[in-house]
Image (cartoon, rainbow, N blue to C red; front, top):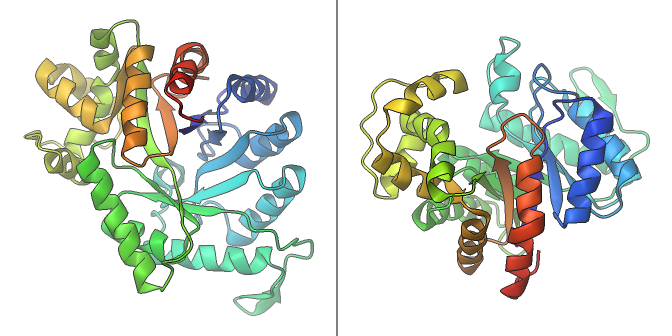
Length: 333
C-alpha cells in the first residue's frame, strides 16, 4: 500500500518543505500539493523546492487545470521540476473546481482536458505545436515520460482518463461497488482507444479522519458526509453503496456543508463515512487499509481531516501506528 499525503502549502514554503522532509522520513510514497492559486502558495514552486530538499518521495500536483494554467506554462513547469527530481513528478489534471470558480471562469470541459494531455505530451517530447497562428516547441524538452493523471468521478471524465491519460485518480470513496463502477468506466475508455496492454496508475482519492476513539473520528466526517449527500453525483455514489439519501438542498460550498452537518443523524454519518473514506483510530485505519489492499487498491491519496492546515496529526499516526501495522501484515508501503 503506497500512501500519498495531501500537503497544502498554506504556510510559508520553508515550513512546507520541512514538513515534506518529515513525510519522506515517515515512509510516505508521495506528497500531493493542491493547486488553487488564491487559497494556497503556488503549487509548482512548492514542488520545485520539495524536489530540491528530498531524494525519494514522489511529488504530485493534485489537481491542476487547463483554465488557470495554460498548457505551455504547465509543460514548462513540469519539465523544470522533472530536471530536479527525475522520475518523481506526477501531474494530475481536472476540471478546476475552486481554482476556476475563484476567478469567475467556467470549469474545463472533458474535451479540453483530453486535448491538454495530448498537447503536453507533444511539448514534453520536443514536438512543435500549433498555438493559433504560432508554431512553437519546448526548447529544453528531455523526452522523459512524466505521468499525467486525470482526477474525477463522472462517467465522461473517467472514460477519458482510460482513453488518453497515464493514470486516474477516482474520487468515489472506498466502497467496493463504487470502485468497480469507476474501474469499469476507465476500462471502457481504454478499450475504446486500444490501450489495453499497458497498466495505468490508479490512485484512489480517500478522505481520512483519525481520532482517539471511533466516535470522535466519525464526527470528523460530518461535513464531508453532508457535502456528499447534497451533491447529486456524490449522493448517487452513496445510494449505489446501499445508503438512502434524502437531503434536498444542494450544498455548494464547504462552509454550507459545515452548517448542514449537525442535522445529520449519527446512524447516517456512521454509514456514509464508511462509504466515503477511512475514519477511526490509527489501529482502525490500518485494518481498513489492509482490507483495501485485498480489493486491489495499492495506492491511495489521503485527504486528512486537518483541512488546509499541515496534517501533522495524520503524519504522526501513519508513522507511529499505521505503517508499522501494515508492515506487520506483510504489506509494502
